[in-house]
Length: 512
Image (cartoon, rainbow, N blue to C red; front, top):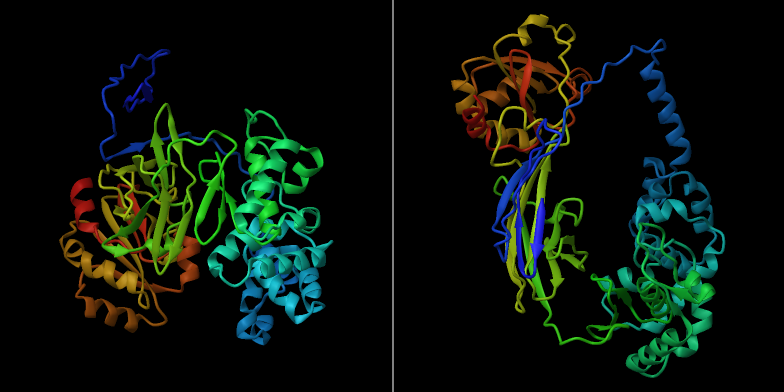
């Protein structure tokens, strides 16, 4: 529970009680939040399932699903093999197009070589959800308009700027549509000798001809540039989308600012303009993020919003949507110089979430921030479970059911070809040898001898070894990734983790 007044703030972690009313007291004394981490737990709900009268044949369903996917997904291995290296991007485009892939391929084949290049650039600049929603109606006109935009932009604009902020028809959260050709034909005469002249002329036209309406108090679709032109009205955000669309169509890269209170355009650097009165000039600052898990740099895999976010705590916590540039395994986030916080977390199979909040102070010369992610530092039994545990079908694996129902049991599923499995077991060999309960080692290997050699090389002598194909583990143990480690106590799952894991010794010590 968060509260603020003036420049002071405070928060309290509140666990609802069984009472009808709870009272909590929050001290509003802090000017900033300390680096912190905590768990947010979900309520466990036991549902009594009624056995269905009909049980489908899942093998048949998977077969039918495979046949269906092979029909709608034309980007299979046979097609990929005949594509040139230049056209490998098409595989991704047609995969994202799903059911529209065949018509899109036929359309692509009928294009000139020049428009084929534009086609690839255009669809690779879009989000997969946009690709699947677009059809080929008026698509030739849109690609011709994109080609004209690129020619108007010239060759001085960096490729990454062109792709994201000129070629793409996606600007913010507006309705996706083929608006470029229409907008371009209406505003091409606004392109003056200099970028600044064009911006000033266009800005004045929008202020005069497009009425402002109040921002919506609910989440809903935004108008795209063509919608705003037709209605001649829009919120400030929609008017910025409109301006960005016009500029992109006439060869000037543009975007809506991350704070939604201005639009930005490219003129050898990013500049901004706003309908609101210009405030005191804010220094441009940057943060260089490095994400680390188990001592390994995983920065290249991190995605904004999905894996981390930047938040400010003012009147209320507000997640920011700043420009994020990724290059050479680095993540550079552009902000103003106000204090912010990185928020990362880990979620288990029940929806319980471990939250990490880390203070970030952007700097003009780029602040470097290292963020630790992955397995939580604070755990208790039941926290670290990647998905809901169901009883193991022991007999299908050649064991007696009672073997997994009593005492302490450590189950380790590993792949002899996996570096993650090797590193995890090398770090865990001492705790495996010291484990007082039963240890079961399940190897993904072709032959038992291969698995034995793998364990001998690592130095693990304890445990009952079994070898099965990966499909058996997926079906009988619900394994999705290796290594997969389960710790059971009297039939209850205490923890279950998957992937590279270097803290087994600490966890067993903390949880036993």
